[in-house]
Structure formats: C-alpha cells, structure tokens
Image (tube, rainbow, N blue to C red):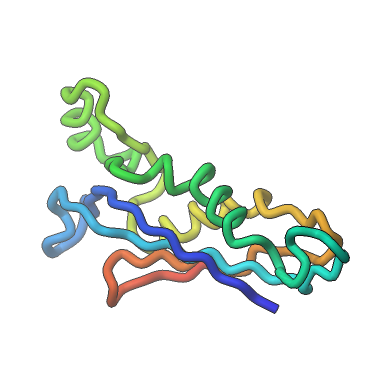
Length: 146
C-alpha cells in the first residue's frame, strides 16, 4: 500500500547558468509530495489501526525536516557567490545554502535525502519512503524515488 501527503511552501531561487528567465532572482509556490509504502497497521486499538501511517505524522515530519526550513527562504547554490554576497547584506534574511544548484530535480533529491531516515517503522509494517515529488509550478515537477 502507498500513501502520499502533499504540503506547500514559498521560496526563492535562481539558476545561475540558465540561458533563460530562471537566471534571475525569482520565487515559486512549491508543493512537495511525500509517498510512503508499507502494510496497513492491524494493531487492535492503535490510533493508526487501518493506516500505513497517520497523515498528520507524515506532515509533521516533512515540516520539521524540509518545509519549515525552506518556506519563505531563498534557496541558493553554495557556488553562487553573487547572490550569497547580496543576501549577506540583508540582516536576518532566511537563506538556505545548498551544495547543488536549486533546480526542481536537485531539490527533490535533497528533500528525499533529508527525509529518508525520518519515517520509522514503529508497527512492523515495513514503512519506507518511496518517492518525493517536488512541484516547482503546477505544470512542472521532479520525482526522486527509492
């Protein structure tokens, strides 16, 4: 069985070497979908009985590991010195420095890696993170799968 929880957040970025508009500072209303697999929990009387995992727990973990850190932040590549220098002039600015260029593909992989060990199998139902889907726009997304 697979379940998916979707969350949304706003963040800025730029793709420094891009040949088109994405080389400029801009932002997106991102959406992230976390897909887990596992057996349905059958533990009699458990709050999670009949579920793979409680959706509120899926959300809480995703917020703790990814969404709260990235929401209303500027996601910047460590090698983008022009933008890093600019952001340093903004006291208290929420900046997330990444080791990769913040494309949808790279962000999906970074999010997957941040979440991989977060979803724990507490009921013996073989719970696993299967996929992170990151929407950059409603029509464009990247998937990183197990």
